[in-house]
Image 1: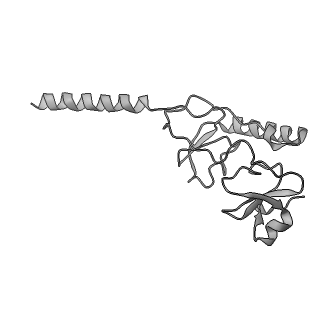
Image 2: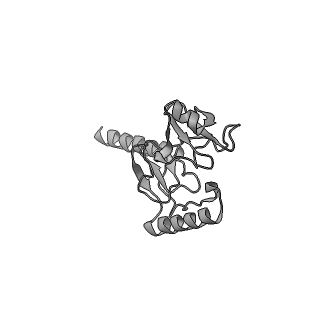
Image 3: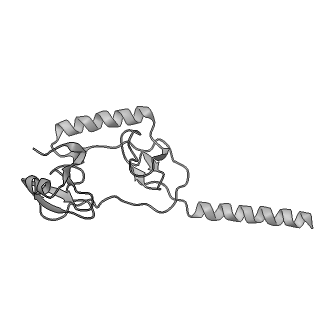
Length: 164
């Protein structure tokens, strides 16, 4: 009887392992790490990569790759005027299996409108973003207005850096 229970236990364990690997997913291309809330980052350095996401759960890039990605990112920023031309380090090796859920912080296309002299105000956080920055026109909630209007409504600059 004990042998049957042991065999059944092994079969159940192997079945659960097979199901777990069937749901596994590799991280998106260009990801350098995974945050503790199961989102992915393409940050060039581990420091601050998962700020607001509970910290870094697993880091794929090596320090050498991170530093080279950071230097190439700096070079591309000086050669071009848009920060979208920056590069991210590729994963160092095929990482362990990951859950199928991924979340994105913002869409890739800015909201229609905006332009010269306008800032994007995130209406839920009261932070404004300057034209050409990462979150300009890309947060879930927000609107375009002049920097003076944003300040008058109580909004403050992203990371304390005013436009201009």
